[in-house]
Length: 459
Image (cartoon, rainbow, N blue to C red; front, side, top):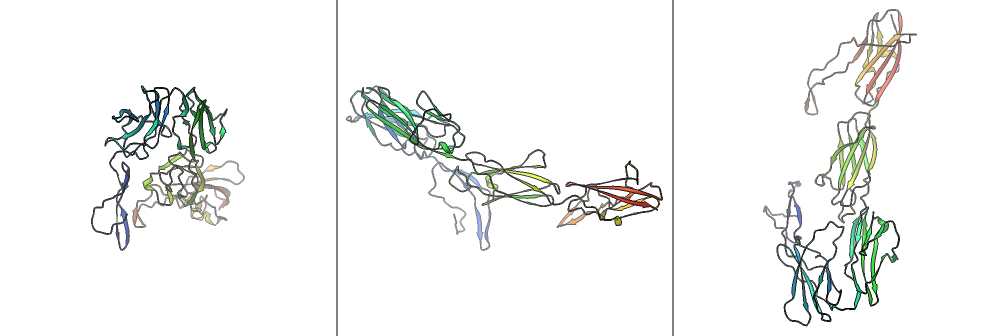
């Protein structure tokens, strides 16, 4: 919503009742839109509910009627109770009022409410209607329905159908409460096919149908038909199965010590709005190590249309495995997987002995002759032996360390000197003059190592 006045107050109208809203504000000038304020969440107040969505009245015996109804489409608050009104059609007296408390349920859909109206007179016609109430008060009446108690009870189904949305892999229980005298026979259909023996369907004693581990193949229309000598009735449930979100499509850009991971926003089947209610989780591991969680993404942090995250502090020239999952109200997707190697490689030795020289007792190695391939060398190892000998000896570096103990100024920031400095040269000492020696020189970094063999003479 845009407001061009300088007033710092705005009335938001036309909102839904008893609904949470997130509000944030940004300033706008000739240069464009400024940053948004921290979002706040507030709720509109309760109001009286709408009328119950559906109502049905059946004869159950010569003295009993059975009324069933569905909750209002817009409760406008927390429903406290329903009130069922019953009166003879030909009577002008006030109706009998019966209070029915609302029962909370964790089912996949809102089941029908039912109430038996007992102690009625056979052959007399009755009017019945229902209202719903919140803490604010009583809402409007449902439509009025009429029926007559009778000994000869036509088969009827009190359960009220409609559309049901359920997440894949869940179970779903469909009710089919029937009446009739003689008792009716009930049959369940799935898309006009009779349901008999099936590993995913269970027919219960109360004629309800349990669907286990539901998937897309089990979506469609479910019909319960009740029939006796005097007639028949049915109820239809239209079941829509929501799939899990698709795995994100990953892209990765590697650098020396970090990786930028990106993926496109996906569509959530749990809600019609694009990307609404989706969160992401990124895990990673180095080579075949343990998986680590980068972060659980909150919805407020995501970028519109694209997601990205930078894995920092990584090792140079090292393989990393990255997984990203998407989670919405239905569940969590299969992981999207990508393997990425940071830039850099093992050190490369010089092609000749130009970087080595000797005197009567030492061999000197100039380490700058080795190409680090973009990765910082972590350590050097040098072994030596007389040419023709089988025994290698580990050399101790006799060259002085070139320590950089000064602070440096890089990209506008002062940086402290490293705690450990790598040598720029290597000196192998205590050698016998007038002998040929073999040197085995190994350079290590995070991506691996390189083994070089050189032959040099001590003059």
